[in-house]
Amino acid sequence: MPKSKTKIGIILNLLKPQGNPEKLPTKLIGWLLSSGRYIFVLVEALVLIAFGARFKLDADLQSKKEAIEEQIPYIESLKPYEILIRQTQLKLSTIDSARKTSLDWPAVIKRVADQTPISVKISGINIKKDVGSGNIRISGQSPNGKELTSFITGLKGDNAFTNVNLESVGVEQDVIAFTLSISAKLMTLEEKSL
Image 1 (tube, rainbow, N blue to C red):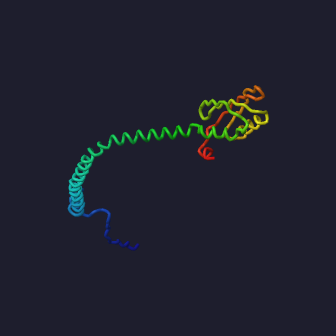
Image 2 (image 1 turned 120 degrees about the vertical axis):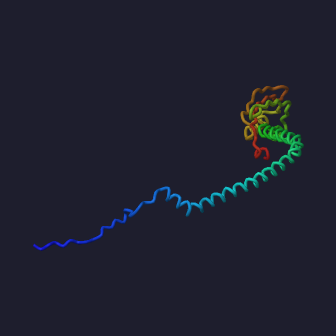
Image 3 (image 1 turned 30 degrees about the horizontal axis):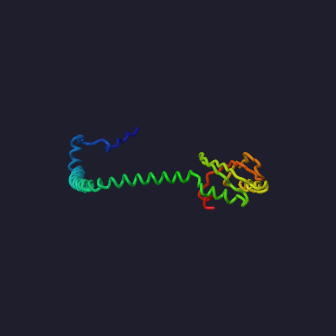
């Protein structure tokens, strides 16, 4: 039998260090001396910038505080005017809300007068205000029923009035005496301008 040849070779393992491995503290010191010094310098620069900026910001804050304190006496001297302005605004808003929620009585009386025929004489008008409307009681005299009917029909046809009721009718000396009750609704600004 022939003799087998033995192969000569080197077994090389690249993953396993050949010699003494560096210890972790040695690697850390090496890294700090090479790359860490740049990080350290950068951090120190940031600290110095922040330290310098604090002095500037403190000086700005102090100057703003002094400017505000200089304005305090002037602002306090305007306090009576502010109180007066607030009172005036309150009065104006109260007047405006009262005007918006109240009846325009001259316009209501004018509408009644516009619907009144010439021969009908009004002897009395009683007005009572309710929330959002007003109750009107009209006493008067008419020479005939046609004029009274015309008056009532005109009031019913006017959109400012509701609940037009003839409360009482009587004849006195050839004249018809009557009493009407009417509800006048709250008119909006557009209706008031008509």
